[in-house]
Image (cartoon, rainbow, N blue to C red; front, side, top):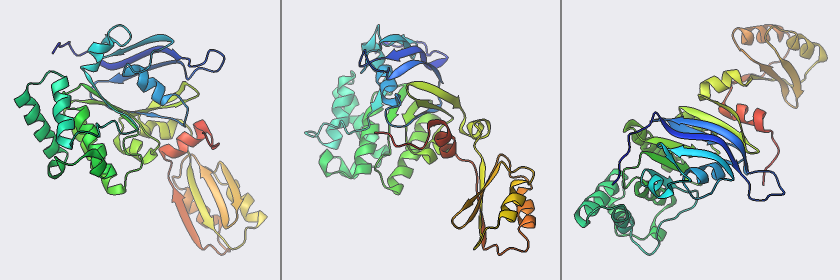
Length: 318
């Protein structure tokens, strides 16, 4: 296998544009993005935002209209065959060969990438053990559960020891136990130096796994940073809910006037308070509520989901 000196950047995207229809808006509209070696990078966005198209260009499955993409230092447009030697891809939908057993899916993948028979056999057995699939080695893909099939897809994707693994919605439709197992496997890959680029609609997944995330919408990168930084810099607010049987106009105005309160809104069961910083605010709210029947107080800290909704809106996307 041809080897290259590993560049400082795993992925560099420069002014990427992709149009599927010359008369309509571009699917990707001039984005610039850099992914560092060894990080887990999340690409988040609503349906149709441009995530899958961007990954498609990076993995050579989609030809860009303009711009440049380098993966491990290789121009994907100029040498797509060489790029494929250094990447593993897990698409949103299963691409397992349904005519082959779990073992054979791994064995023949290794053979495609130049491994001899003995090496491919050893590699397949090693991956089955690592991904907890040894007992299912002779089962067909249709006989596997969703979580097992997804683990097999990831095992196959790393069968040739790629430098970068692209995961498109890797845990969509999986039960919580299978999701946690896959999270652990993704962390293991990162600990071994593999770069991971994943797309997900699961904001908890992005917060849990990603070193950095980019939120994309209408083909443009809106923000890009570590999840914790985004929650503070993008204006995500702490939410405090007061449960009251009755909300008086006097109480609502008193709470709205408290230092640190951005807004206080009457809701069916009480008051919803938004604040950029909750330090000391809870006590001030309790003090202001004295003399009223306060049934409950709940606090919801800023999350990546609140950042996502604020940036991309609440409207449904097809």
